[in-house]
Image (cartoon, rainbow, N blue to C red; front, side, top):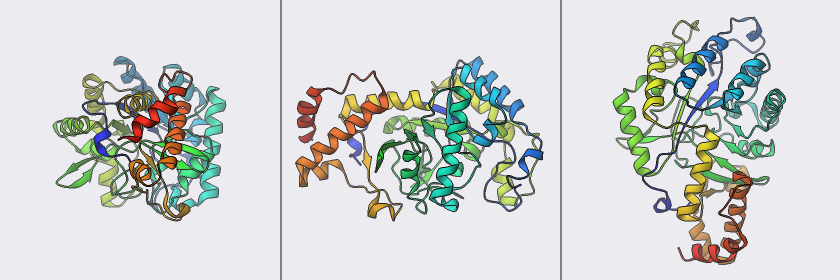
Length: 364
């Protein structure tokens, strides 16, 4: 990864994301109903989503909805309602499976099915993906390849800290490209700050519900000072204190049901005091900032041909010092990946960049 000195400082790129799940889509517990029972359970998604859409509209905020494919095919009108309100539609997989439990073939079938369902509903390409439970871990290093192979351009599944399930504790804290056999996948990890030397989240799920607004405000200022984006995430069930409660263990009940009545007030506070965008809009602005200030964005490589989930900390500068020709080739590939991601409007990539821009970066 490129050295932290190249991060764009003093800017806060921010987005709000909503993982569209129902009250019974809780992971990693034997008491959670299996998918065969889901059709027979009360659904509260319509009520909760309509309330969220009303709040977002009142603040003129556009967000990214990571839709679970199973829900989307049963609530097509709700998916279109989100799209028609100007929000980004992205994929949360189909059956809410943990990547590290399924294996590559089942995971690929799941996320491709979700992509097809969503694209058929809205008639547009689905570019973004987030795994259930942030379930891309060191036990599932193959997942990045599968996500890129399945046609997604960006992923937001890495939780760069320890947590109950999911998480890669030593993963980078800023967006970066992952080099795969199918091309570059842009990874947008969850926002993390350090408290007493420990990586901690304050910006989503139970973390957001537990944290006081003053602590959240402090965390956002830390992200801004470091030039890292703010990524907020929540679930529709988290604004619904009246939802049915599953007979979970006491620790899991605390994580899933504590402070549900605080989610909506905190959401309104965030919408009022911060500029929140869709993830796609946020990351496109972030990439442009990175390019204009450092002419590069971090690129990570999976070690040992995907047999390990560790992301290599090898920097592009170190590649240049050992092999300038390889460095120039890699830089050109990354700039093309950036141009591909940004679409037709890309004032930063040109033939001149291929020569003078590379030479300028070679001197870093």
